[in-house]
Image 1: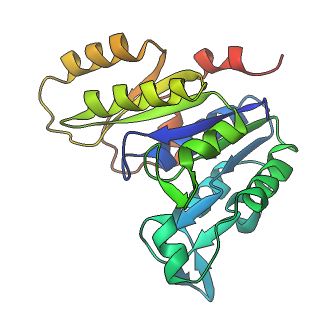
Image 2 (image 1 turned 90 degrees about the vertical axis):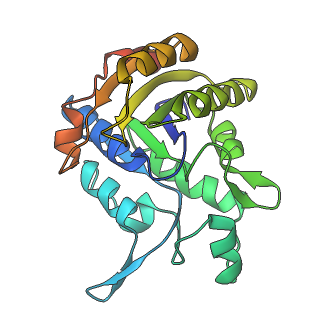
Length: 230
C-alpha cells in the first residue's frame, strides 16, 4: 500500500474517527476515490435489526466508494473495550493475515486509503500483534491526532518517537480540541510543532456537530499531497 495514510492518536476518544472522516470528505471533494477504513473496532449497538459500530458507520458515510460496513470494518467486535479483551470475551480470534488481506483488497480499489487505528498507537490486538505492528505492516505515512488537553505534549512526542523507531514517516498531525478550557493553548501548539517536526493540518476547535463536512473545513490537505502518487 503506497496511496494513503494511517491515522493514529495520542489516546482513545480524542477524535481520530472525526478527523479521518473529515479527511475522507476533503479528499473526495478533489475527485479521488476515497476509502476510509477501520479494520478493527470494538463496541457495537443493535440498531434497526443490525449490529453496528458507530465509528465504522461514520467512516462509511464519509467515503465515496459505496463500501459496505463489512468492507470498511473488516473485524467488528461487539464488546466496548480493548480489542484483545473483547476478542477473548467473544471467543473471537484477531488474526493478522485475514485482517490485512481484507484491508488491502479494499484499499487497492481506492485512490486514497485512510486507515484508522484503534485507541493509541500501541494497543494489543493479540499476544504478538498490536496496532503499531499493523501500521508497520501497511507501511503508510502516519497522521497523528493530538487531543489537546493536559499531558498532550508528552503523549504526542512519545508516539512520534515510537512510530519513527518503527521506520514509519510522520506525515502530519492534527490538533483536536478535547478540553475547551485548556490553558496556554498557543504555547502547547508551539511546543508540539517544534517537537513533532511535521506539518500541522489544522487546529480543530470543540465542535458541537463534528460531521465530516464540518471537520473538513478545519483541515488542510496540502501537506499530504507529496505523499501520494502523482
